[in-house]
Amino acid sequence: MDLGQMLAQTAAKNPDKTAIIFHDQRTSYREFDERANQVANGLIQLGVEPGDRVALYIHNLPIFMEAYFGILKAGASVVPLNVLYKAGEVEYILKDSGAKAILTFVPFAPVALAAAQNAPELRHVIVAAPEPMPGATLWRDAFGGAPATAPQVAIQDEDVAVICYTSGTTGHPKGAMLTHRNLYSNLEQCGAIQTIATRPDDIVWLALPLFHIYAMNVAMNLTIKEGASILLIERFDLTSSLDELQKHHCTVLYGAPPMFVGWAQVPTLKDYDFSSVRYIGSGAAALPVRIMQLFEGLAGVPITEGYGLTECSPVAATNAAGPVIKPGTVGPAIPGCEIRIVDAEDNELPHGELGEIIIRGPNVMKGYWKQPQATAETLRGGWLHTGDLGTMDDDSYVTIVDRVKDMINVSGFNVYPREVEETLFKHPAVADAAVVQYPDPYQGESVMAFIVLKQGETATEQDIIDYCREQLAVFKCPRKVVFTDALPKNISGKVLRRELREKAVQAV
Image (cartoon, rainbow, N blue to C red):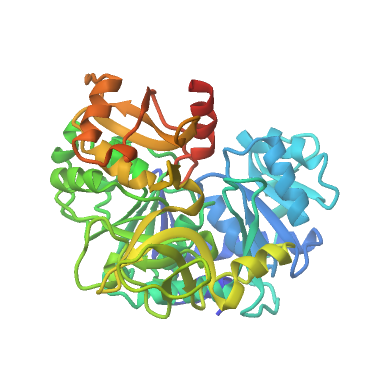
């Protein structure tokens, strides 16, 4: 099934059911589907054809959702853009994808228009704005008068629905091509797990950015497939977001580590009523066990951690797929998905041994856009090679240790940043922490820790080093500690280690 048809079927079955709650405004499934049809027909009238790419540069607003499904209904591919991107980053993706149009919202229009100047295949900049803007077409002019009936466009399972550009931790980002089959398969895989499966009466709290694959497919699309309601949070705030959750009696919460790190430091968290919440999921980055314990102790609701990648649409494993939650693991593979731990020659390793995580299943991407060599390397042997290091226990639960490239080599000994970070999070004064390597003339590389202290707490560099030495082998312990107000992270919560490595070099 194509995703546009999925929305149409839900709207036909429950036309008056609330699809979106946004700032106390409610949109029914009928209204949602009709507005998506208007976007589709408007794009077709502007010359967008099946197989074309259309960029979406909008934050968490209902028009993102309407535009997303409208692009799909027109037979085009959605190219979601991180709203934190600057003109050069937007320009690169517009040019690389060959996008024919970009849909945006007034605060991001200047960046979109600047980027459009150097994107030769781009024909239209469409802006949701109250007044005309030079070089742009207003949203209401492009879509307001378009038919609200579904366009007659033939869409196949293997057509590319979304091209999600990876975060680009090294070099330029690559566009992962996710087909309708990839995305819908992942919805069915998640839906086969009773705990995760969205129910028609659910109200899903959604503050994760919609342009990220986790929010887009797991939170948005899974909710729409089952005809539940989305409480769409425009901008995440530690307390007001919880006020909304409590006010609307949300039943499902999808979060990422920075949210839980922040909430664990909120002294009034225990005063919020989480009694309506039946499921809390964490993804997008590794969740420190200590943070999980602190949050659960205050909120009284367990967190189910999972694992996925953009290239997997995104879910590959979750604790919800196993009989119990094992903190520190991401659980076993989801139904219909296979995970192996392999050595450098792709030989499967015994349980407990460390190696690269590889994945196979219908949710694995078609490939990287216009990058056949990278596609062949990443999908060699029919398996997605993730670049993540991990282990698998006898119950097939996977533990993520680190990225291959993040491993630190200290005098020939391997140090995995996550192990050191888990130790740092146990220190009573530490709110957030990240570990990277820096060049050392004697050891080759040494460990540097970047620390964010809890409000009102104090600690010295020696305090942190001594604490680590009580719990870790000396070669794993930080030799230098840098205190900072915040760690650089991308929108999904992953620490930008490349930035920290650059700072580490400057600090020595």
